[in-house]
Image 1 (cartoon, rainbow, N blue to C red):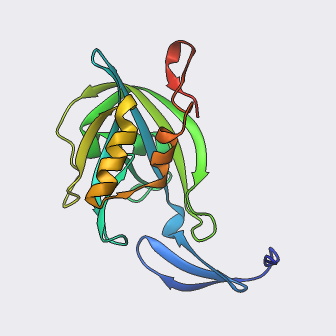
Image 2 (image 1 turned 30 degrees about the horizontal axis):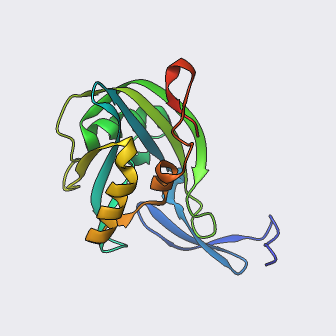
Image 3 (image 1 turned 120 degrees about the vertical axis):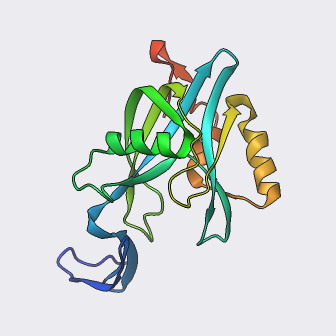
Length: 190
């Protein structure tokens, strides 16, 4: 497909509080309004009972089912120029009830670049402490799952069998080698 020249005008077809539908040439796509993006957290719990990952499950209107995901949230939806690390800390506690002592930013990623311009910053959180119930704010109704890393495949298969959607970012937990430790920080290899 021929891509539009960079100087082809971008037209806004519709804009809401969080999403904007745009068109450049013949290409239609969705972007986040006000330049906000997301923070996604890979929370690893190294505890006496082994290594676990913290996942969340919540109803997603576009899918019309509950979806298993990594904890995540919008950066800058309430505060402009908010650092991704601050948003990630807030979202981890709100959604899961955990705080992390150590944070590492992996980088910026795009989940569906053919349709959505939204990016997300992936952060790894370790040194977890349970400080609350989690579950989200307002009416989010988030279920928190603490899953042994060696049981991720079975957990995902069981959730699929229940009819849950599985977020694409869960794939990094299913692919060999991505969670291998390196050095003393025991940070996942991504």
